[in-house]
Length: 402
Image (tube, helix red, strand yellow):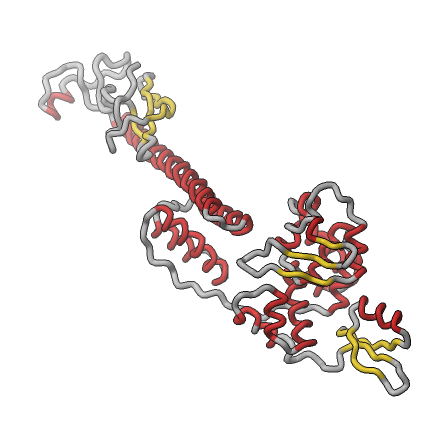
């Protein structure tokens, strides 16, 4: 059987064999798929489906029918019967559907290859692993849902039909905008604007309940997030060499989202939790938690919320610890620049949110404690209490927000 020489649509000779098509007379025809344009076709120079020479026994047409209709004197050609015409039409439609399916597979394979090229370019440009992972997941999600990523208008229609919030559509349009520029295409990016909401701020007691009831590894991670307001990706990137276990100091040298590097003085309680972890590699948390940390946290959080009868715990995420710490620090200091530096923000607009979160905080919503000696005062400070004043009888007063 001779191979097809070129695609009848684009002329390319980059062809795949794509199975056989069986005709009503029992013969078969080779199908081909063009790797260049995705067009699906049968081998050239095959016998026409509408007639044949030397038809099989039992399929001879009425004498003179073909000649009288077409003016053709060849006795071996005939007009198909009505049944055969319906069958032929069904085969044509099947070919059309198969051709569309083949083209779909072709553009999906092409788009997938472009995605990997784009991800590699992001790596070469030094984009963070978290950003690269998010971009890849979003592009592959759209591709797997049948969107032609090589057609910007198809992506616009997809985003319009999706039942997503404005924030999700905004992120998807940002991701695809970078992909479009990589492909050298042009499009008008949809004007989605994410709605910024006031984040959920739990009480310190609720955070402590989660920390106390989770497993050893996760408990240490949550305590770290509570004291430092690190993003979870920043916490997972910490190495043992970044922690001074003697001076209770943690250094963040690999911040995310372009934030500034930071250094933290932490409590003895956190250092104790970290010392209980086995030092199996250079990272504190990455290899023991990274693959399943999110799912692990959600499972334990749901169990703890049911056990304690407090559904508010289900609203706590890793980033909630960052919001809580920023709010508390601003409530203590009323110094927005200090909070900006503590969080590593480069734009003060991102920090100003936390000035709104304390408007409804009660000024007397504190635990109070007293100390008579310096050792007692030291223990209170390490427990999170802050010094207020000293009474005339030399008793030191401390407080800690509930």
